[in-house]
Image 1 (cartoon, chains in turn orange, purple):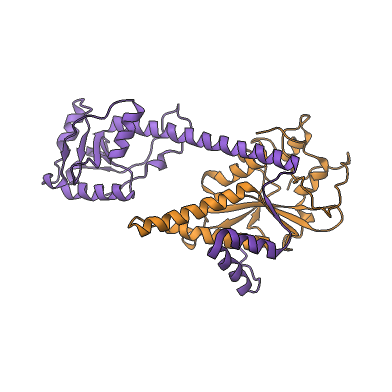
Image 2 (cartoon, one colour):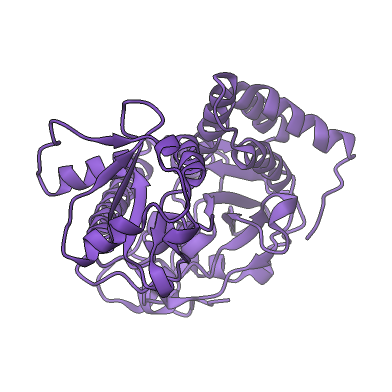
Length: 200
Length: 210
């Protein structure tokens, strides 16, 4: 994993989720290529199952049903669907406590859904209340796979909290805020030494 | 016949450690008849189960695995496939308990596998339990390797993504409006995407909150 830009004090607000009205649809919705791959993987599994069934093989009903459930969930997330719950720091996964999780699964899975969508809401600028919702990972809950994947994608090493990352002398993690800006976006203000990362 | 999927034993990710003891039903060979073997062969062909463990007094003595699992073992140990395999047809196993001689043979130290099939091509292999455990360990190590490869792939993707974000060639998609997103979902996921958008609109934007 590449060492990246330092965790930046101006990103501290990312973790302070009280700033974000999470029932409000996000202004921007970010689907990174990794998540597109997650979706394509679900689609491929569903299509393989259908092809197998056509040639007399065993059908994977779970795969076929999970794919539309995941797409439905994304459409809802784009419209501001809130998370099932916010994530807290669990050292073995890497700190993704600035993220939230949405349970997705089939009725048969009740009470524990098989898959999760991990995402985070970040303010777009310092002026408006607009947020960008970034989908980080979509995957299986089993053995925490989706959370490991999310931490890895965000460059969050295990056994290190966001606070520790922020305090590290050497930059070792990708910033918690995407650097790509909208053309109309106000440039982020420079970091203030008084800013402090708040971990939910 | 009670069974256990092999991948359920793969919780242990360190290939150098012994596999954790697993809770597996040991089937008494005196309960097994030719029709059971025939059913097992069908289940293997359909991919429903991975193996069956046999033994007297709940002590594992042998396992029956799909033939391709036995071929994997040969690959792992770099052994050539035997030129001639004697295949027993399930209909030739006339009575329950016909597999007991295999257990006796393994207890005397034999490690020779035997093969079952409803055709001339072997479909299932019975082997001593110790051999089976070796196969599980190899499979476990291969699984861990593939997980590591997967992790490396993800790490590489993260690196590329970081770089892309830094130099402005980010390949992700950022949507500013619902319409943009809906169109993208429909373009990429066809009917499933269209139905998801229609479903949301039909519900008047109401969400199923957990």
